[in-house]
Image 1 (cartoon, rainbow, N blue to C red):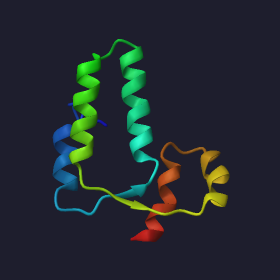
Image 2 (image 1 turned 60 degrees about the vertical axis):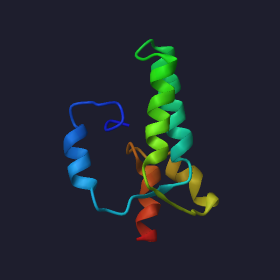
Image 3 (image 1 turned 45 degrees about the vertical axis):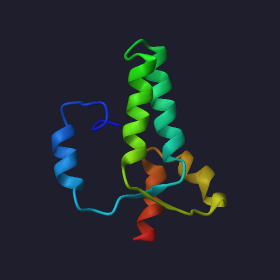
Image 4 (image 1 turned 135 degrees about the horizontal axis):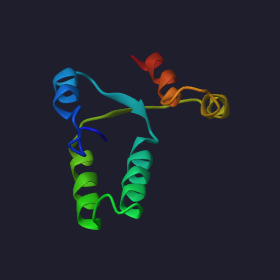
Length: 92
């Protein structure tokens, strides 16, 4: 999201991830959509900007891991932001 939204960390994120395999849970598109929706509702961007951002996101090559849903509730309750990504490390 930070790279798509042109936030200050954008260039560093792109530099660190160029040539890497990006792996994450299948919920990432939903999370990105929710983030753009929230930014739109907070008047932080226009509908057109949100649509453009999602189009940019769809161009990013991501591999989605299949996770065991019974682990989901425990992961969702984890105190760490992004903890839902930890099981994806098993896919590497």
